[in-house]
Image 1: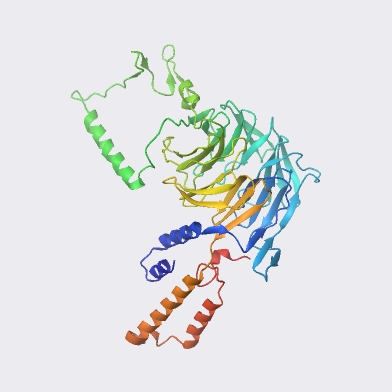
Image 2: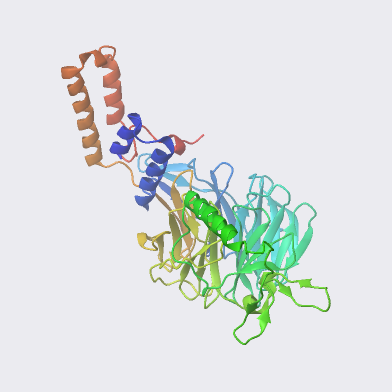
Length: 492
C-alpha cells in the first residue's frame, strides 16, 4: 500500500488510478469488523438491508417478525472495550405493536432514493407501505394481490416516482407515490416475481426475474417487455473496450458500404430469412398481414422468444452493475450468470459452483468498479471476481443461512443479514505491525538519504515537524490504512 502512496506523491500514479487501487486493496482485505457491532432488535430472520444513497449513514433492515429498524452506522450509541468497539443500536424500530405496522414478514425495506425522510416496505401481508421517517407514520398504502417479494425504486428517476413491486402474482405493479395509485401493470411472467431491479443507466428500464426462470426487460413507457434473456444465446467473455468497439464498427460500416454497392447502383431489396423448411420469414418484430397493413409486434412477445429462460429454476436475485453494462442473476438452480445488457447475451463467465437458497429471494451486492460481486451462499457470503468468476473471498460468521448483503461504497464495508437474526459488519483490515515498521524504515531512509546527499532539501524542515509526524504515526490507530485516519471514515 505504501508503494502506491509513494507513487502518487511522486506523480507516477494518476488520481483515479490511485483511488481505484486503494478501494481494491480495502475490498480484498475485508474481514469481520472488530470495532463496529450492530445490535439487532429483530426476532426473526433478516430479509433485506440498505444504506441510504444520499448520506451513506443510515442502514435500514427488515425482518420476518414484521419489524423494520434503522441504524446510524457512522456514529455509535455506546462503546465497549475501552472505547475500541462501537455499539450501534437502532435509532428506531417499527414492529407489529405499531398501529399501522405490517402483520406478517417484511420481505423488503428501502430508502427513498434522494431523501432519508421516506422509506418503503413490502410485506407478506400483501401491502406496500410508504413511511415518514421522522414521525414513523404510514403516508401511503398499496394493496397487492399477493405476498410482496421485492420492491425497488430508480435512483436515476427525475420524471416519475414509481415503486416496482414483485409479488406472487404474475404481474409487476408500478405504484406511483405522486398520485397514490397504481400507474400500470406489466404482464408477461407466468409465475410469481421474486426479483425486481431498475437499470442504473436509464430511469425507464426495469428488469424482473420470475419463478418461471425468465428475466424480462421492460420499458415502462411501452406495452410489453422488449427483451427476454435466453441462456442459450451467449457471447464469449465481456464486450471489448469502448474505443476498440467504435473502431470495429467503423471498419464494418465502411466494408458494408463498399460491398453493398452493386453494378446498377440501385439499392438492394431486403431479403427475408428462411426457417429451413423453404418458408420465408418476416423480419423480427413484424408479422405479415393482409394487403399493405402490417402489425408491429414487440420482440419480447414473440412466441419463440417469450418462452426463453435464463435459469432452470426460479430467478432469486438480480443486480445491475453501477455502470449499467452488465446484469448479474442468481437462480434456484444454484447458478450465477453474467449478462451483457446491450446484447442480452450470456457472457459464459464460469462462476464457481455454489449452493444457493431455492425458496427465498436473496439480495446481491457489487462494488462500485464493479469488479467483485457478493453472493449469499447458504451460511456464507462469497465474493466472486466478475470477470473470471473465481472466488476471491469467503465470509464466514453467520450460524444460519444468509439472505441479504449490502456493500457501502463510501465506507468500503459489507453488511450481511441472515436467519440467525444478526447483522454483521465486514470492514477492511486495519494496519499491521509489519506495515508500520516498513513505513518507519522508509521514513528513516528518506531523511538519511537527503541529509547525506541533498541537505538543502531539509534545510526548511524543522525538527519539531518531523517529531510531530513521527508521534502522530506512533499514536495512530494500529488498524488504520494510512498515516492518518481515512477522511471518508469520519463521522459528523
